[in-house]
Image 1 (spheres, one colour):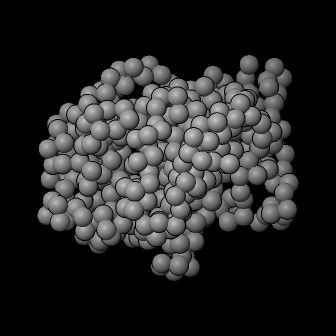
Image 2 (cartoon, rainbow, N blue to C red; image 1 turned 180 degrees about the vertical axis):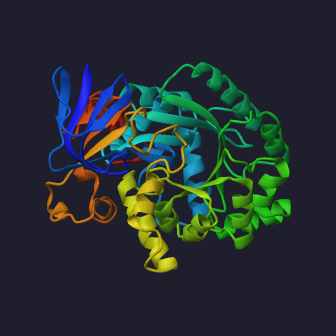
Image 3 (cartoon, rainbow, N blue to C red; image 1 turned 120 degrees about the horizontal axis):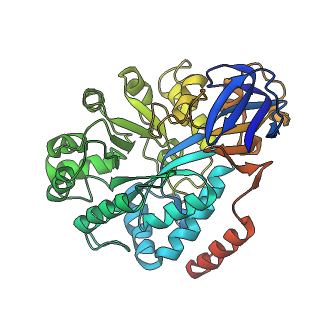
Length: 421
């Protein structure tokens, strides 16, 4: 049956204003006024904004198990003394599946329809995404030391090749490569990865996350992280680099010249006291900048709307009041230039990935500029319906394809092993 969204105010759309949207077979068939709803499932979007789904371009979905486990710490201390040991002890296939499903549901409540993940047992994250009905790019974490899933970097790279084959026909899932960072991988491992990539392979990596990280790479490899990527052939148009807080003017110039992409992760950067990434300078340089929440272990929630607003406000503090206006911030939160093909802009013949956001709440009274409302006033409570690939997966704030109580129960049972309440 066709799906018709009626009476909503469309933004980031081929036609902006009050229009109806007709959806057939996962595609937006028509955007117009007064479309007849006969023989359609109708979503009445009166007093609502209709817009594309959000894209969480950098996260670790399964890390919801470690939410609040270790707070108020610097990045390296948090990672090496708390997170890595906990992962070695508690991460397995079932944990990744259950905790990822929890995170996907949490993310869906804030209007997320697609995400890119880096972790272990990524096939389980894909399984959870498919069951809920969201899009995912899965990137198996590639690290030199043994992980819960792979013995070394080469094994993780080879596993990724197998995952590409396994999910080659899956409409909602794409597979990329997830080298963790230049401080957890040797030159040899990074070169092996570069030598085994296809031209269109996505590379998802942490880069320039903190001053201490950059200093560590300089000491160990004699070069800054960006230059290490250039040396091994991993700085390219399909490279997506999370954080980039400690990016120099020279780094920014090189990123732009190689056509690589940046993922801003503002709340995690703040909580770990890593700093504020110079996103405004990157945008001026023509760099594609995306938005991510990071994992719930360092954020500590996965509300992409919060990170979008924080991103805009931080750039105003770092640069000036005109930096990252609401239209720019919203574009960054919605797949910017195309991590997911066609998603992030509502157009005829494009994918039907749509959010219906209510204007009935107190914070939505009044609304003069819908972009301003979404970026500066809205929150996850504003999200009413989410449609991905033409299918309604959040309806009236309720999940269509998942039992929320069951998922929460399973994660709580796992968390008791770590001392949770």
